[in-house]
Image (tube, rainbow, N blue to C red; front, side):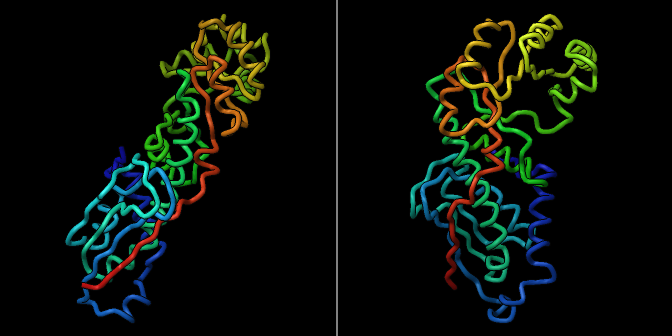
Length: 278
């Protein structure tokens, strides 16, 4: 689930370590013998969906490695307060200098996965899938999208490079819905287009659109539009969809709902790290 060898993931881990440790952990080095060995445990302090625990191995490896690392749970598992997610044995210096960076990733990614689980659970009685968006923390997109998947939601496009999503500004710049579609279909990439009016909807369908984005409609309005589309194209709904409203939007018959909140509004979950000298 977590691709720990992906270049963007390794770059994020390396940068985070360098940002925090810099030239060395002066507190640890001034208070603890270099030869000291320790055991550390990562504990869950509240119920959550775990994400990112697989990052511990490459994180420690970047600082010289550890003697033993045990992942007691995997990303995607729901854990209750008090659960031990992972344990590690190694040089005390290594464990302590990696502590904050490791927790930052676990807390942030578990927050995303926990919120994604809430959204995906809210629509499980429908055939609708919850999609993430590009509203991610700069530099952490791959990791946050992995956390979304760990929480049971579905990844949308990774960036501007792997799928075409024609939105209102693209339509305005291209001149019309049909012209934007004509140009996009020549690329061979998957194409989705946003429509804002019934006239644009008909123009998009006439132009061969197979996936439509309906933005900022109420659930009742979305249901009426989807009945009118009648299966001629798949439909994604977006625009301010919250935990309180996601089920109503999913029940309209939409194929997808997209929720930027899973990444831009997830809070860090509470985990901590406890060390004992050996």
